[in-house]
Length: 317
Image (cartoon, rainbow, N blue to C red; front, side):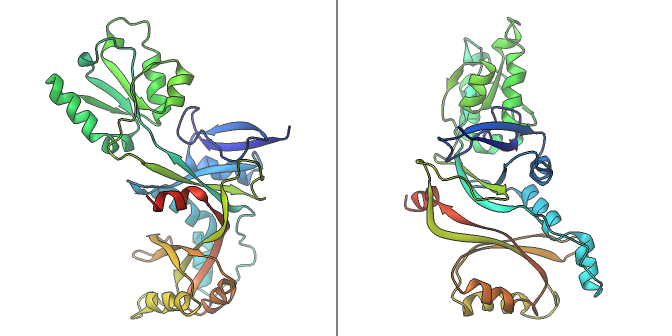
């Protein structure tokens, strides 16, 4: 059986600790301390693929990932050189790209050793979790006439690890809980007391897969024939009236449908932005990109990849 090395945002037990379409392969997981480390792991050839969280269906974009894509694909030195008309031949873009996407359901669980949930007044979890479990947390406070102390942790799995260390403390273990995945509960051997406590059912995080080669095909393949490309660009004449509209008109001219458009601050000057767009692919995409040359300071195709079937399943609901 072939082996695939996959880097992900660790520690073990986080929602990143999953990888689709590999039932015919052995997967070696390499937890990383940060999203930036996921980029470095693939760049340093420490893995075959790297998973990067990109957006959540209820919380929106993972801005840190967008900023890292900006820094890797349109860096400050390149922008400054282009704006000054200098040679950019020595400035290289990465040899890896986005080659796939995966959708992971975010099912939060109330994890604790406590035999009496009414005594719990301290909960550990990642900061993003609090807004996703408001109804459960508010109801817990209301039912028990208490105020919960919410303690931020670096990951949901780390939250369960903290609770696990209290298993031999008869007092403290009755008062603390974590909110995390079922995988984290299993890894750290702390029981789940309530399942699926998130406010919005169907809450899902979309991950992008970084790599140099296509994902392996298996009997459990979830990809479709539809493809999408992730691009980034910086407007050349940033202050000209209608400059962004001129760029969007190019996509319209070539009958290209934009799925998303997002901006992040550039690194060349204040109030100048990097635009990220996802566009459905067609045979006209190459001609459209050629037409952008006079309108943008720089652009890069970060990746082209097949749409995951989960995308179509979710929009039908």
